[in-house]
Length: 275
Image 1: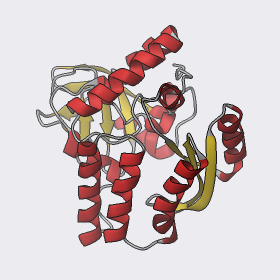
Image 2 (image 1 turned 135 degrees about the vertical axis):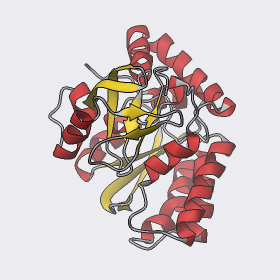
Image 3 (image 1 turned 120 degrees about the vertical axis):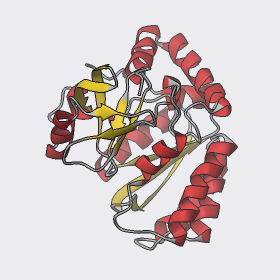
């Protein structure tokens, strides 16, 4: 399967649906990204830092309509980058909220994200699930809307780039509808292919490894594929092992998936499979 090549963030930015863009890029690819946005007429500033739970070195790229707006985004996040390996605190929670609002994310989703961050700041166990899993569990509903599927972000398949407070959040859906409308107008085949890809059940493990369900029946998974495989790439060993362990796994009514050899995982039924 080919991932549709359509830059929904840029389309939303150009149309005024999204006020700014923030990209976390590998150092080797950042110059090309900056050049592409600059050549398109946007204002771009950058900052290097260590991001994510693994504290990997990244180049943060801020795209806005004016240099002042782009610099404001960079300055808001600057203290977070300087925190290095420290646990999140009050400053990180406050500035993360400011950043989310300025990027155009729904306030309810920003508040939910900041609330999870505040809890992590208060107490963090090294054996806790990764943030993506915690966010998916918090947003879980029995009938999630595929337009809000943010679990395929690792393969750049998305309509939204934030974590929704619920997979039925009305504000997030209004935002997603606007973006999808732009995508379908810009490139109808790619827009339809993107929505089709997002309309698949996804299983995420507590360590963040995830797979796409290909077939399911009777509350059980029949077949699954790693994210790498749906892109035509060779999966890393954990992805391959996880996807191979999913067939015959039982799915419960709250989305819990019991996979042999793995902690309880979570199925989000974007494709409509019953739990």
